[in-house]
Length: 389
Ligand SMILES: *Cc1c(COP(=O)(O)O)cnc(C)c1O
Image (tube, rainbow, N blue to C red; front, side):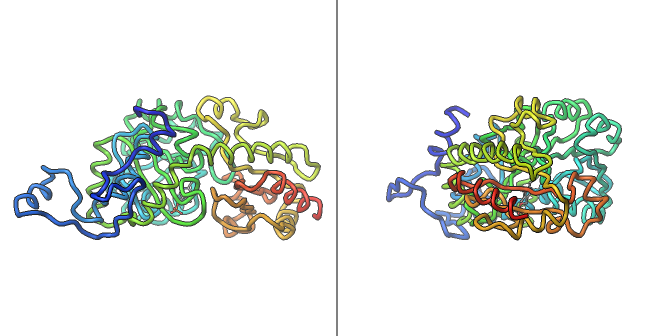
């Protein structure tokens, strides 16, 4: 990145039209026209870099991708309709039948379903390591292992994996190292610095930041992105120009939003640590976090997700949700609005208790995506909900 993060987020822009707009216009067009046969030929042959068709590129998606590429310190990228289409397309483009994947067990629910239900259709198997079993990771690598996949911080337990340590293992075994950086955002952590080859985001979360549009993006090494791009342009998971326009605009304020989210989250985490109704609090920048030192090494801030264990288990967790007055009960995260979830009775309710414990979801675990309301009001709501239990 040639300029500072905040500056690139604001000043990276597509060429302006003849109207000299200050802000980026929305290019709602499915295709682009050519002056003559030769220009059309050269463009399709990629001798000339320009927009042809919005399934391939569009000025709005290009602007959005260029910003993420700079923020993550990547070489190239591609924008997808959703975070899941970014994840699935990345795997589908890079893997062949018979390949093997190693992944952390604590990954986003649909990503886990992709590993267990869909990739096996193409004879692609996944082996898992738990967050506290990184020492076992190397023993899972096989002759046919191609990708190593992780998230950090993890969902919903807010555990931290050592990006640099895992990067070294990937390098040693020549694996493609893919990191879902959704919870941290590129403002807080840039996995490429620690050896990642590809970084994926669900832009739906903190990048949009207001719970309005869906989006995904993969950025990283140019040769890998070339394969992903060609696969995507033929199979069609492209982001819409409108969503790209919204998300590029959102990136202009990412740094200030994430700073405030993290400030609020840390205050809430400290409040919870003192509450008599709470057994345990997990927030990366609390000294009590088991991977506090690793978090401090690789993250600029602790992020906006706080997990805690309410005393009284499943019933107490459900009651706590019922007592919430202002915060939202919703499955999303990274919104301006504070969102409270109780994974064991909702998102992970269909798993057995044993499977839930595998990913650290105890019956009393509550996850809060701390928003941008005044922190006094957020704490007041959480406090009254804990006290009414
Ligand atoms: C939400 C999420 C996804 C999926 O993104 P969508 O935009 O909902 O498809 C992937 N990874 C993580 C960590 C997420 O939180």
